Image (cartoon, rainbow over the protein chains, first blue to last red):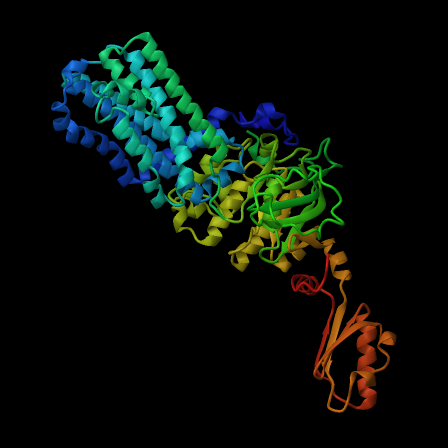
Length: 272
Length: 354
């Protein structure tokens, strides 16, 4: 392959057609980032253990909620919530820290001197975290189906749509949040607002269906609410088509907003 | 694979481009802290005379900005090695970042390989190599992993092992980057900049932090690249480095080019110096008429006399013959020909205006 970059006498560089491809670049960066995740054992442990630990801690509280009226069970609350914890703790929080660390180490600036496009740098850095997060979710869904009464999802397309939407949202929000922190330590504080809002208001701890309509109507508009509703719909079958479309649109709007914020305000270099 | 033959011919990079300037900079300015491009500036850049001294460093937002690059022009021809020389804070890195397309100029125009490096970044990236002043590498990767990642993102990259060997890092390839010395990190950075055999190479202080031996090895490498047809722009605050490597150089001072040209031209534009102490009872007026000695200027401080001249031999002979005739001894006699160092020091002290 590479030999074709030059002609046989080694004299000529051919045109842009011989350039290394976008996918190759992404995989290359993603691989390095995966190595880095593997080297940060404590962070890896946290992101693997916290979601399950949170779910176990919430078990008692959820059991006491008036779920039956809303057509839910403790399992259809806890399992989707665990996937939500994966999105928030493993992907969002870890990735915000990664963006900040790479920026402060001047890695992002150095990468921009190379052939990677800006979007590729952001996506490539996110790839392993997203991949690990999805693997965790698949494992949880399968294990949940085997161990709990919920069984396997009856509407997997809604679950997949919810997860995809959630991933895009948390990656975008992580990149946007990185702007708020000047160091890896500060990043642990910068993630708190989004975390608190998502845990409390997006139906992870308390399902929106259990809340008064007026409150739920507002909370539905939070960034991770549509993803959580869709994920839960994977087991419950969800509401009307109208509901699903509204959730998708809200989710896409947040993803778009996050992308806009990143494009506008993302910081590639440490503050001078 | 013909990778081994890559550096085969000096004509490697020649082609339709050979006569064009690879880098062309006009009226370049860069300001920090004040927000976005000033609408009142002509983005094409004009001749800077007449507005370089214009005040108004206050930005439209009301916050005072700092202008690191204040209107510079230069061009670099294909295959040339051009050095930007200056003290810390002279604007070297700020200028280089504009050439690399990492930032957009506040005013003026940059062309690299015929393209705007900021707006058309993707077009020039496969053809340039960059070494930043400070390497940006994840501290928990090894040099080999770093180079492998970089190779995966670089068109026509050399094999990783060869790239590391080239800068003498093959023995350290499995050590974490955070455990490398400053000099080793510089060499890793250089290895990555060279990975794709770039046509144009930007090196920001490539030998800072290197020991003497490593510095000479880096010089040899840079010269080898230049000889194989690459165009190199480097910044340095080592005069020796500029003298050793540069075909042409520009001395930056406070964001402006204070002197530019071949080393010999820059040196020739500056006078030589002759200084000595007169014994008690003698004064400057006792010397032969200074103009006849080819002296163009003088300073005195106590008994010390310092003469400037473009004809050092004539001036020195005149003074020494005079001293012999009078039978006096000149203390602290110092005869100093013009050198890049002298030129640089004078510029750095702000003794000269651009």
